[in-house]
Length: 322
Ligand code: HEM
Ligand SMILES: *[C@@H]1O[C@H](CO)[C@@H](O)[C@H](O)[C@H]1NC(C)=O
Ligand SMILES: *[C@@H]1O[C@H](CO)[C@@H](O)[C@H](O)[C@H]1NC(C)=O
Ligand SMILES: CC(=O)N[C@H]1CO[C@H](CO)[C@@H](O)[C@@H]1O
Image 1 (spheres, rainbow, N blue to C red):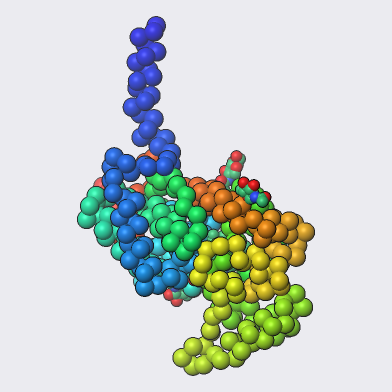
Image 2: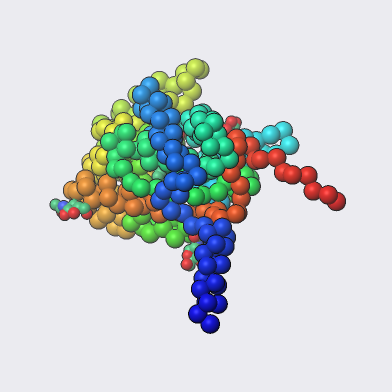
């Protein structure tokens, strides 16, 4: 009896890791020990000349995880035969794909077909947040890359929604209101295009500080043939630093997008906002937790999906006999 049980346990230990391999911190410790440092080096190289890469990666990670889960479906290029998520409206301004390519190329040179593109997005985002002054947190890895990328799956919350409307998309992913407010704190870096918030300027949105309205009006009025849709910083205080300044700014009615300003005004979210305004450490801690949670949304694990060789294209399928 005892022997049989031991044997069974042994068998389970051999089989389970393959079938049920869950995300874990240091997943590549044996299969590609340099994986995290290779990604970090690529992010550092880019960050040195382009601080805006942090915003690009944060937005890419969010869009990836909220469409079919964190499976790198956002990276697939469309082809003449098939369009991909990149062709959907909200993608328009997602940037940073070349950085993911750089990291992938370096990884393939060191440990081919080991590290997923979905993990590269999650790790690179963490590294960029840290370089911008944000928290460093441990990222569970072991995600697999998806086999589908369809523009019809893209259904992201829009910038003119109310807090409770925006929350619908988060709740559908098992994220709490507190998670949503925390993650929107990512708007402490990056920009929005005038087309996103122009209605608030034209309509003289009464929830916007008058000084900010004048400033944004000047930015957007400078639109020209070569720059038809100018951008403004989402955090008017410290736009290139990852800190709690975004929450302070919306407390001063200086939110650029409607959803951002609503966070400070809506009774569903304003207590969380004032908590983060008062306590920078609290925001850092909660942000790290919420990012790990977002990074776990509907991930592919074990033998699901694949490890892409090129993050922009699915691996060629082995031909099947008919
Ligand atoms: C209700 C949820 C959200 C809405 C409605 C929303 C909407 C938007 C919109 C409309 C833009 C401007 C795009 C442009 O004009 O180029 C933007 C930018 C951005 N979003 Fe969000 N977002 C949400 C949640 C998030 C989350 C959860 C993250 C990351 C954790 C995030 C990170 C960013 C960043 C960093 C930018 C700046 C991008 C850049 O500078 O390239 N957003 N967001
Ligand atoms: C949310 O949690 C429920 C219950 O645990 C689960 O059935 C569902 O698949 C989860 N949804 C997502 C998107 O993870
Ligand atoms: C700020 O938040 C941190 C992290 O949750 C907590 O340990 C600390 O006590 C808080 N500080 C104040 C002044 O409330
Ligand atoms: C980055 C990227 O691929 N953006 C695409 C998003 O979708 C638009 C509209 O279909 C394309 O023109 C962009 O190239």
